[in-house]
Image 1: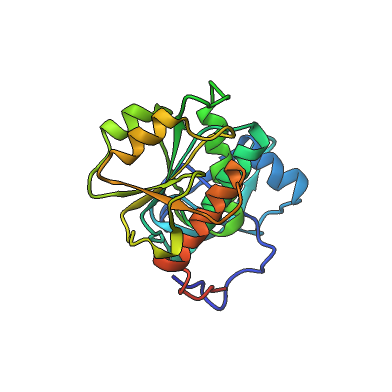
Image 2: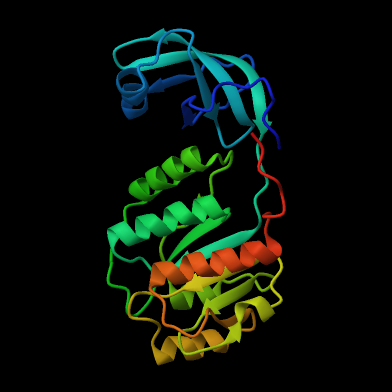
Length: 251
């Protein structure tokens, strides 16, 4: 998955578009994205823009027509095919807005394939806005160079999550009360990491988790971590062992 050596400048804007791209397509960007390109980036006709569609990969385009509310493009060539990310789900209890946004951003950067909000007994955020989380996912993927978006699940209560859990997918449960150190766990993909809310899991939830055959309690070190720190630490440890961090970055 390499970018061609004769690619555009590093400063070239990069955007996700919800429309299939190929050499015959004529993509159009409107709304906030068009405003950003025209008024912030000062895009001119003929300027390059990288677009990706979560289907075919990333394409080099040039601006064809710049209107007040939309911009159309000519597709020049494909730069990268869609990537295959490690099969790691991140299951997280919704936390305060800024911290949850940070978890979403870092999960995208680290290469998670699926993001699953989980409602626990101590979850303090009772409502989340899928549209806002989707916007966070798109922005993070635009910035970190991903050509595929992680999927986003609807919020589910912990007992329901466990009831319908696929047995073949190991669920690593970050238990602040202790568990097997993460580097000692055998959890190749498909796998998932579960991180609790700011107040941690209740004893009842801990017993429910430990009784499930797919669940393994893990430790993320000797100190108590914030929910967002635990999520990123667990992802990083797993990616270092089972992910794609052995693949060289290309440019």
